[in-house]
Image 1 (cartoon, rainbow, N blue to C red):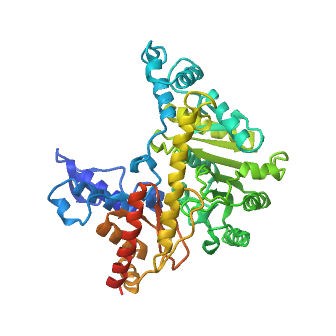
Image 2: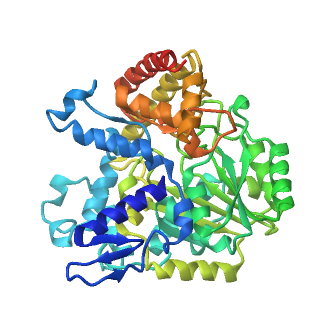
Length: 520
């Protein structure tokens, strides 16, 4: 798919200014022939292997339809008025509002002093605690404002806020700001660490199946090997230690040097929340096999099941004595994009390096330095995420009420969508204990399976495109996240408004019945 898109884009670009006369040979406006250096043959071939289903074929089609719906004539051919984007965890794009206090502080920090914190009427527009926090942040920025580069690991004052948050979250386990890197969302941190880990084509990374495509895409781009381990769907997508041992044994037999283990908890796309024992078992597995543990913990605030509790990998490792004896190598990631903030566009996040060789950490710092620093608005929002208004301050009560309203609504929607899809004959959907997604399994009719084989694609891609074209609901085929052979399904968020999600569940049920009848 990526190859097709790249080829199409390249050909369109070439046709604008030149006439194509042969393989990569052009006749430019002046008439002389020239050969392009960058072509589909000379480009990094790992880029062709790389796929990112969350913004793949179904989403491209959805965007095209969305454009058509704005045209009065073209809109007539569709039986719906809008696209319901449930393909990606992008809360603000589907109606979630920014938290007031954090945006007030961000605005004041970005504004020049004369138009913000020092304006004579500032307290008529902003609460006192927002003004004071903005003053503190401006001081942490060294008086240079948010338009200047920061330290390559991020502003020290902001890293100190994160260190205190981690210490409090993990029951007193110490966190050194020197081991923290502020990043452009969690994604850039993940990319940096995988770049350091994948040293050659024999290096492999253990990733869950199903998994979030940033891992498979990044590993492919770096030329490494994906080493999949299957989550147990029938046990609520739980971890199976025998499966982990099977996976690494097979990888070693295949000559793969497995260097790291990726854990996504709470799960994406699967929505499970692992028990403390499960997280500790993973820590033991990584120490046993000398693997760096990459802990993707961006959904740590998104736990909806009253019986479940988020336990960080750092806390689990510390309770086992692995931090004290320096036996584990751990990198954990967090982001402003998820949780209750949903600030995807601000690209805020951090990673913590725990028990990593100091000489290696120096090289990771060098990599961060090459990018100068992560964006400052994202750094500011990360600090605000981990340290909100002080209890008893002017904004504390309203801030907590806003967060609770978002959390309660997500909890309701998780139940509505999970139970609603599971009730559809032919569907099986595990409960969403956390995160922002459900990942139902669907029994595909024979006609869809045959059509997929003929077209060289997957049945769930055919299904997802049909669902989109007939209802306007945009989901991601499960095949884009990897799954067991013979399984089909999709990932959907439950982020759009509750009324929209209730309607969507009914539409999915009606469409599936029709889809099965048409593809017997």
